[in-house]
Image (cartoon, rainbow, N blue to C red; front, side, top):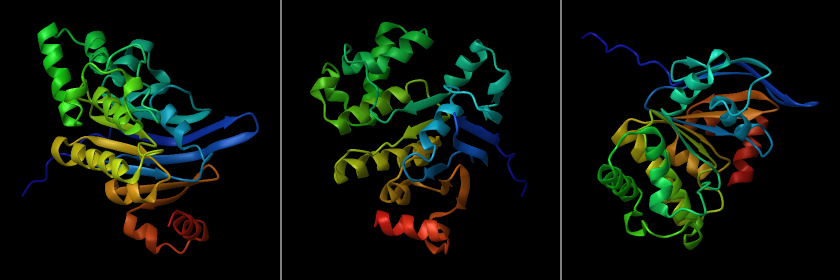
Length: 250
């Protein structure tokens, strides 16, 4: 039987370097995300995980190397081309980054107002749909200050999904959450993959989250890719750093 054509990767990284002064953060990173899969990026604090996400979305520029985001080479993209590429990407910030002066509904509607021509009625229906997906549809009129950290993360995820992205980036999605809420957020990431075929890249230091969501693990250390493979291979690794990482996270 003829195999279906392979879909273009939403992210292709080649020879990525980034330093801040004398501090080398990334020193030649290479990887390609597989469409419809969840990739977790692990590493100790300060190893460049969040910097990597900023490079992937074009919030920072690399010192060398290239990033291809949803078919667009960022180094040669015009501002308009970069904005068009970003519309296909959702981003859940570590602290959710909701607008404090807007209600929950207005936060989720914000990208719809800016980037679509939906009527007010259709926009409201879409907001209800998005919030229902994360279990927050009864909180439409609340303010971010009325919500717990986990609830804010849920709303942030609903907003990240507003434009039906092909790729979602998560920066420490379960950091600071109680264990039950962390599992719920991880389950939502898995649901995005299984029910909506969304590609995700998840930066985390939480091995429990990685075990739940990851099809693939990339471990960064000293600016390099120390490991790239499955969770089972990760646990079988005899690399001293990985063994210490697993022990410390246990």
